Amino acid sequence: MTTYAYFGPAGTFTEAATRSLPLGADDELVPLATVPHALAAVREGRADRAVVPIENSVEGGVPATLDDLASGTPLVILREVLVNVRFALLVRPGTTLADVRRIGTHPHGEAQCRRWLAEHVPQAAYVATSSTAAAAAALAAGTATYDAAISAPIAAQTYGLETLAEGVGDNPDGVTRFVLVSRPVPPPLPTGADRTTLVLSMRHDHPGALLQILDELAVRGVNLSRIESRPTGERLGDYLFSVDCDGHVDDANVGEALMGLRRVCADVRYLGSYPKAGQVPADRERAVADARFRDSAAWLARIRESGTA
Ligand SMILES: O=C(O)C(=O)Cc1ccccc1
Figure (tube, rainbow, N blue to C red):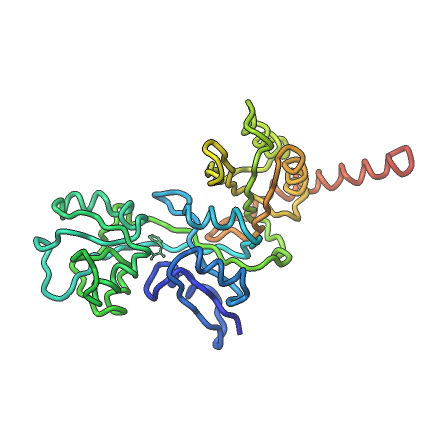
């Protein structure tokens, strides 16, 4: 039996992401109110795995997740899943669009529905809630300070609310990437289409610090798919770089890039190598490049051992 803590309550997009994993019949799903609570449950051994959002196609990286994974007891990402997020405007039975004065939702929900809201409910103010489902739950319970919630369509059934409008997202193709997180374990085997997540801190602020990082990756042909600077939270002006790159820690070029980063950075936190979600064709050039890296390492070893290649 595996216990999955997910960013809840019931009816969040994170629950949908969790249910899209290959779950066993006796696996247990535990909703927790925030991303830090879900990750703490894994760190403290109350859950085996956590599922949390990490990036979406409108707002970019999810700060609560990036910041929590960047510090504290190390955790690793084992897998990612993509969810096409579609939003619905939910109300208590009887409320009409003209009645809606305040709308509750998660900040990422608001960001992804902004244009629709400006056009259809321009009179409504936005109230931030801890998740899209928490907005629906409080509305149904009568404890909300708002009269409509933007949530996943399924939250209407979960909480007994009425759907006033569906497809209220500005982009019907909006996608959120969720990650399955565990206490440190060896990575899943390379598939040829993998991603590696890292957090990099520089020794001190100096000219060209970011260029040094990019150099270590570029010179080994490692492609970056996301890079964000995040404040460390310690001193004004202290930043970390949160990075996703293509490839697996077992790939020769990624391994060499990691060693290079370890030399130039004050700290490199490895957050896992895992298969990319979606229809990603295996990169044939990667296999050729990997063979060249391994060949050159073997060549150097022969010279060191016997004085000749
Ligand atoms: O609040 C939720 O339902 C979540 O799972 C976080 C979220 C919010 C908006 C878009 C994608 C994920």
